[in-house]
Length: 384
Image 1 (spheres, helix red, strand yellow):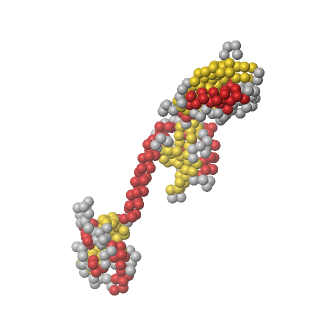
Image 2 (cartoon, helix red, strand yellow):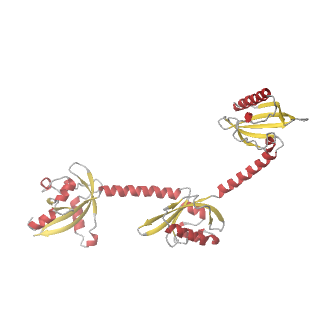
Image 3 (cartoon, one colour):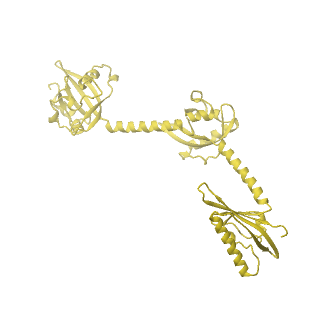
């Protein structure tokens, strides 16, 4: 090619960019070292070949590659000479994706296309994988069980998912760009602002639910609600973004309060019952024992986690009688562990006083019909 000087040819051949030159019909007339290394084809193999050997026509494009070169090279605006991505093939048959930049050069009325190729296959695969991950993450966030929102360094809301809309009552259009303070009762705003400022300037990247304690949120209607939140910070460029995952704990707190009330009622009945009652595990060891039962034992006698039959219920001096009584109680417990309700009459001696008792063991089973607890109950018989 007469328009290329010898030194210029050497410079072009040594360029780090993959460069080739074709005629207006697509015949390759220059093929530098970088494009040879990138494609696997040698200069000798490609000189005089049609460029479609390197950049074959895609099944998705009706226009051949040379026509594409002409369209892009004819654009006189340098800003419009942007990278064009085309499908390519290496000598070994491996498909690649190339960013292609084209310019036109003329010599004695001959038209040539100067083409720079950049292999972006891995880059595009990584970008596609990242976009897919972001799409999945965005969909999970959008439909997740927790409200998710983000604020910028001015404490203005810049992200808002559907669950946040359901939790606080504001639509995305209503809150985007608004202050986070609209989601807080007035008396909590200053403290919340200081807490967020401290977190933003600190070294910890995240704080999880439970670490921050309970916070109070404000619904659009004005009602307040107990919340838990995890918070994390990320940077987009040099811009700090704080994101929170927020959960309404109203139902949980109500359930906890109901449970505490039921436990208090049970404790009142259990501890103030006239009958001696003990709750045993499935091995017959004591889990709970009420006051009436404790009065049958020596003062300060530890009972929890001990087998029921090993507690000192009998103060008789007769060792044989005591051993027989213990064995009888152990046998009764074993029967109850197997699922049988035991009901019997027994006697014990609390000091010098003999007590005749109506004694029962009631097995408690789970949904799989497995015995998980035993309820031991003793009532004093009339006249004892």
